[in-house]
Length: 364
Ligand code: AMP
Image (cartoon, rainbow, N blue to C red):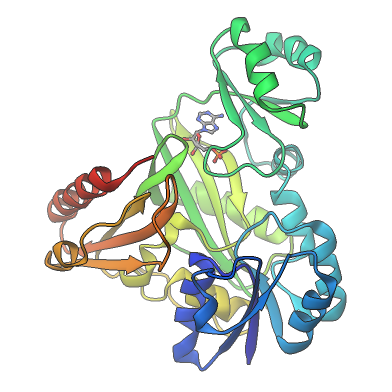
């Protein structure tokens, strides 16, 4: 079987690495000549809207998936008329527009922060009375890792925040005074079977994920599973999906979902019975899903902008290093480490140690 992937970055790379033991082959479409998954399969080099390359991808792959959600809707639609595409173009369309996504959450009973669409400075000024301060202005599309976002602390911030966005359609949302950020990662296969990983507790800085920790018996697990089940079923979703949530006063409020494998689930490679990458492949290939049970206490630390010295990380028992084969560059995710131990105390201690090393090489 050959799996086609739109994008050949680290997520595609980790999907391919999980697929090798299952005898799978891979073909990637990516505009970058040195994308980090390229040498794990065939590489079609060109733009995502190159119809000739898309046709080749559809022709040569038994199923096509993607590693990011900002695939033009027409591209996913074109592929879906030629081959099996999972997740569906509909899931992509909902995830890639923050307004459509928030409307969708509300339609299926998933709580969100208060929000409003904004198409002009006058709109923004008008809706702020209802939203209140602080708030966050976000571009509706193309935003990730906190890009295209401004915090609004008072009416004095509105004009500059609006101009920073360069006139693109936006959404403003109330700032949630959360106690924790968590994500629930789930996989649904073509038969409608669903498996859920233990919640990840996530720490962001500057809008970028820094550390994720696998929780044990999290009090919010059931509510998160209820939400993600609604989402998976409403979208008739196939594959892995990550739903990012804020916890505030014992309630969960949805931030966004990613229709793909997710950075907050990287700990599953060593920390779960079956990794999110393998389960994504199982789901899209119509195979039985694997157990998602944690195999100890696990956490993940991202390396952003700079790499640690390999030996210094590998010398720490219980720590696994994943280098993505990418040149370090400001703000770029270049590696992660998984920490897997038996007790909360050692997990906390080692995670702190690795996070300190990550901060030292971090230039973001
Ligand atoms: P996003 O790109 O929407 O996932 O936002 C990146 C990060 O910014 C989130 O993980 C939060 O830490 C923070 N953030 C985004 N939206 C809100 C919000 N409405 N209230 C509080 N923090 C937020």
